[in-house]
Length: 202
Image (cartoon, rainbow, N blue to C red; front, side, top):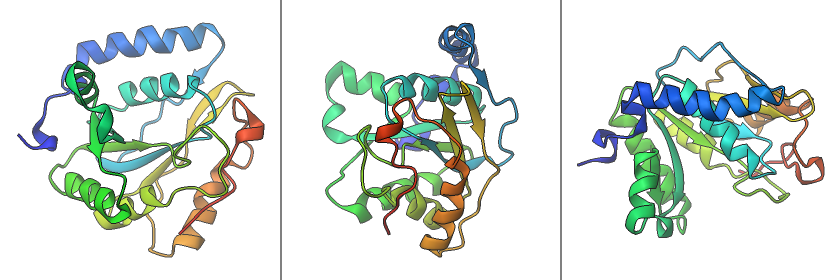
């Protein structure tokens, strides 16, 4: 069975609603507000930033559960062993070999081409630590699959999760990335000293 045909939690609307209510409810009680307007596109790459804390993962869970699309995320292939691997795949995880930039980009482009309903959720920094540059994989996937990019903003100062308008990349990485990162100029990370949302790589 191909990855695009594999059943995940996204095929169970009631369960998704319960997850969104349980996890999202914890944040709402703490004063968080979540975007209600969802992107119109059926396929897109969603970047979630700034990524500086383990709490970001739980915010991503709430976002993914609310999208109404087949949400997927990438993780290194070594994590997909035994019961843990089965759980990750059921949650929408896709195992990738990160040794080759072209390999995982091609994997994701192929996955987009196999389906008409998918959101690939990526933290563009690739780590919680501060990095000199964003990883460019998310951009090259969007270009290769001819899908838009949606910037999800995790603002810990305002306690809001906001989705920027869909952005269709032109193929000019530097110019496009400058526009995409501008969506984060007034966003405060959980740990601002680790925020890498001003930097990029080609």
